[in-house]
Structures are given as structure tokens and as C-alpha cells.
Amino acid sequence: MAAPSMNAIVARLAALEARLADIEGPYAEAQYRTRRDVTGIRITVERMAERAGVPVATDADIDAALDEEA
Image (cartoon, rainbow, N blue to C red):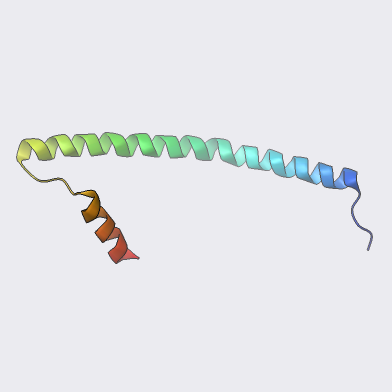
């Protein structure tokens, strides 16, 4: 079996780069929208908790809960 030519390798690489660009665009947009939504929810919950006098979970509380799930 003969090794692929340099032109074939370059063509395959270009096709892979195009596929990656097709995936990265929507993924980055979804990641941004998710981060924005979570930030909005966090702000709202913190405001509600403050008004109700309910303590908000600390980073240590969150880390402990995530460690328990793992």
C-alpha cells in the first residue's frame, strides 16, 4: 500500500479544519449563552436570598457537593 501523497494529506487536513470550524462556532456560542444564563440565574438567586436572609452557598460548599458526586 502506497503512502498518501502530500497533496492528499493537505486536502484531508483542509477538510478536517473546515469540519472543526463548523463545530467550534456553534459550540462557542452555546458555551457563551450557557455562561450568560447561569450568571443571570446566580445574580437573581443571590438577590432573593439576601432579601430573605438565606445564606448563599460558599465556594467550599459547592466544591464539597461536587466532590461527593465524583
